[in-house]
Image (cartoon, rainbow, N blue to C red; front, side, top):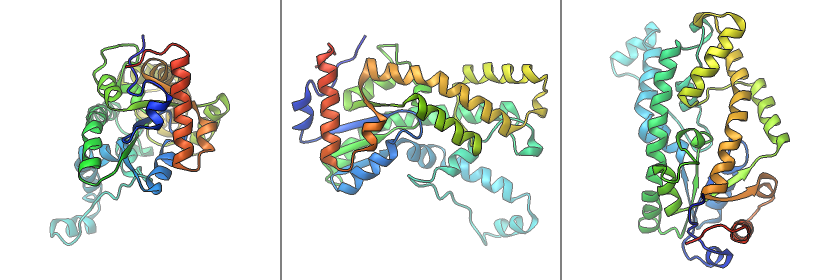
Length: 298
């Protein structure tokens, strides 16, 4: 199964007066770096799915969580109640910490964790927000062109896109809408890169989004190995253990998106791109390779 590509061959992409590309892959493969480079080139609009999630769809929830925490401190409570201070989320394309902090980690609350079902509730909120933000992308393509005058649009998807779509379902509503509006480009990580991402995460664990079924499965497995009650789980220890599992879980899902819905480029090749022209050449080659290998195109 392969969905049609919106650019049927290399020349159609390279010569397109209005390009639209969505970058897909695990966090750390270079999606945001390339998007920032293209934005800096002047004619590419950068649509960040994670930024949209953290502002439009999760922003109020994030700020409310910060306010609840502040209300536990008498001085801050007094200032908030008298409208003497305000609390806001300073989320940016480069700094998504407010969003990840809100998601949190499950486990012992005394060690900074969340009760598991509260963690699941926030995960569900993120799922709904991510789907909505992805479905907003085609609208932003039109906004970028009609309001701001950009010719091209780069959509920087979050690392968890593969958790909210089914790349094996030819009728998946999110992937259908995205593939009809943009060229989906999967950035393929190497084994060494996957291991490096695990190493970085172990050194500094951070909150993650999991598919709920997979989350419940690994939560039971982790607790079962140690005979732990939910309140005994070290949030960071679970995050480190779970991250390796989620990398293994996601890699074939990313591959299926590239194989069935778009094209694939290597992370090493993306890392060498220094200009919009080099980016276009790389993507053109990927479109040509897909066509050569029998991809069905429109």
